[in-house]
Amino acid sequence: MKRLSATYLFVCVLLMFPAQALSRAPAGNFDAAGLHKKARMFGVYMLREWTVKTDNTADQVKRSLGSGFVIKERQKYYIVTNAHVAGDPNATYTVLFYGHNKFFEVKPIGWDNKFDLALLEFTDKDFVPFGHAELGDSDLLDAGTKLYIYGNPLGHRFLGSTGEVMSSASYNILGNEYPGGLVPMDATCNPGNSGGPILDADGKVNAVLVAIIISPRSICLGIPVNNLKVLLSKLKGGGEIKHGVMGISLGDFYEMSKENRMSEPFNQITVKDGVVILDVAKDSPAEKAGFMKGDVFINFGPSFDKVDIPIVKTGPFREQLNLRFFAGESIVFRILRGRDYLLRKIVLGLALTVKKKEEGENK
Image (cartoon, rainbow, N blue to C red):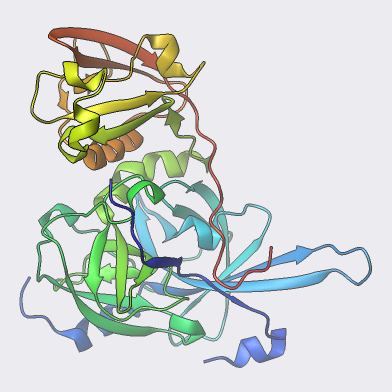
């Protein structure tokens, strides 16, 4: 697999301003001005505050900011943002709407550090936001589709920019750094845009901004909104979403070097392409389930009588695996070993997630 030489940043910016200074900081035709007005109704400026205890000085209150937006689910309102913006249940969060001078307190319900999504609720149960976003269909995005990014770049509140999608489908642009495809955009975004909505021409959210690639021209990356829709029920369930691990490394057979393809056990593979197990970790769930180096994945599913999800490429497979199955759940795989087709059942282990370091934060 190719590794990116570019640097990418998770775009949440840390501000060390005094509190008083911070409070003063300011499918049809594509109508950027109209989209901006619409986004003002549901886009929010997010502020996080947390206390750092020190040995020699007084406790320090730190602040960071990001972006987010309001959605409505079954008559209840939520805030959507990135987990690296609002995935700490011990911090305090407030949001500000355009044209209002009051911060509203919110608290995290659920978060997913792997897909970098978080869901929050208003602490005032009777509060009715000034508007809410509609979720679009990110599968319909195509190269050249115009989109509108809304958020709080570099702490400047409620700004937007226009860009175009750079790929005909969600693209596995970060390799192993992210479990699925992202929407790459030729647009302007900066630290502080994290968690902000990316709108289509109809004003529907099609992606959630999550990162920037700098190489040397910035590429904005968004989480496809369809991933959010799949994970919403889990996020509403509360706490951190626990993804499972198999304990294997994977690769696409066609990307292997000729030397590797001719070596044992890969020289026993009888197909021209497929997702291949490159290695199996000792004592891992995969080893216990009988998977072996050189096995080719064909299909997977929840039970022996429903192994019907095709496995074609490593990137889409990793994405679907993480969206559909979680730690402690079992999966059945149909694999090819040499010329034999086999069924193997595995119980996913617990993934160890590493919280993404925020831009500018001192650890």
